[in-house]
Length: 228
Figure (cartoon, rainbow, N blue to C red):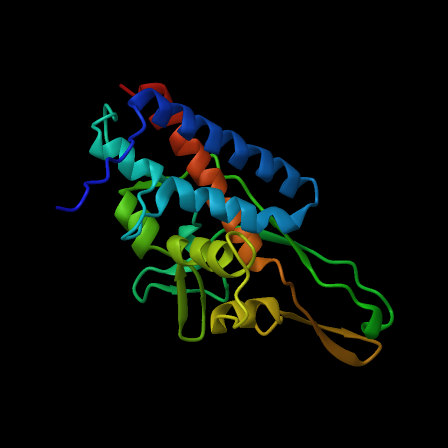
């Protein structure tokens, strides 16, 4: 007869404390990112993954809360996407790579060879639409170019699974390669009759920072205060 392995399960109070700790770390990483430490984007993605992404071998904290019936009410998730940037009939973006409102900061120099990349900055929205978790996480597109479409789950997994969150993949995903090699989201400038493009390596980072703001609104205002 095989020995049955007994699993040690954390209690509800330990689960709540784990949730608060992950939210605290997410907040701290966001503060560091906002202070110019953009390398923390992968850490932000990893914390969002712990909070929201379940696999066959692991459960997200959010799913554990649901399974244990610790939520007084199923929350809706904040959607910062700017709807006037999307064609309502085609579901396509209008000359934008992200449906989030992103500001691009760039300093133009005389010599294109000395030009530094653009620095995108996320914008926190005071007004937003609410969606069910599955739609918000798995269906709504937040970044698109050519035939590529990324949902929030896609963005979080690319950064956390391949770009230094949990580990670094030796072989780069085609989408990550395009975004990090300035193959998309570039702006063309002409100075002294010379045309050149300026790109950014931080588009995914800015998008995941925006997602983090949405996540913190839902957890800090709707979930944590109303746990059973």
